[in-house]
Length: 270
Image 1 (cartoon, one colour):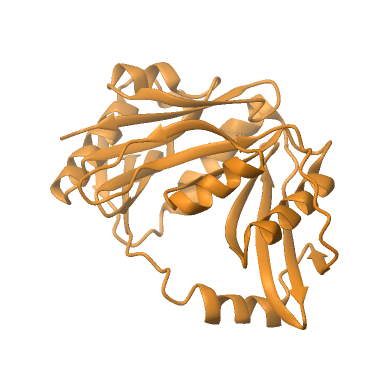
Image 2 (tube, rainbow, N blue to C red):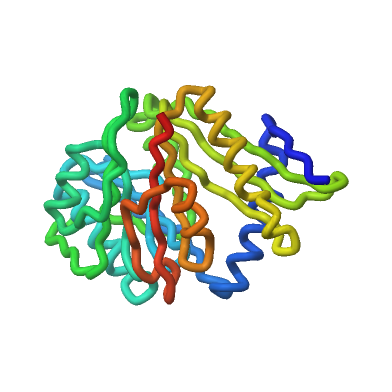
């Protein structure tokens, strides 16, 4: 008998990650992973920084600060130079309209929009795939595979001390006789939820375990005021499954990872 439990501790999340990664590797092989940190210094002061991550053949940003658009252009030019030939593209999603306008001005294009909700702004997914961003600025730049401890502390202290946003993690686990057979993880921010992980072990597929896990997490999200859920899935994963549940594609990234498409889907649940 399959049982379903709500995990408030996140202790089971690594188990979901482990099984999902194992499933993905069967289809994609082991893809290169790399973190890269870029800093710009002017008059001995930090004026720009981007933390970039290569995963599934695309580059994403985990943290970004810049004094003005020309510093942003310089940082992006460094990313283009470093990752050209390694990545299929660069992607960023966010709801800061001024930042999005600057990215579009530099050469990013809009790839999809997650519509606004009563408590959340409209979120844009934007991409750059030509790696042809250049800058004439002659400023000191630091690039590393590791964070610069001093610069990172300055970055957090001066520019990100007020950016922490309350979030709620939801996890449901499916077990048979106390043995893990599947799980789902979602993160709630304001009235939106992102489904970051969903996996069911191959031998248990066809028993509607994935559907029940999604039922549980969607109902829990509704009880916490969520009105919109979004997620990402690839060709070899669960796109038809999500579409049957009412999720709609709003963005497609090609070669994410190489040889496959990645889709962002959204479902309005209220």
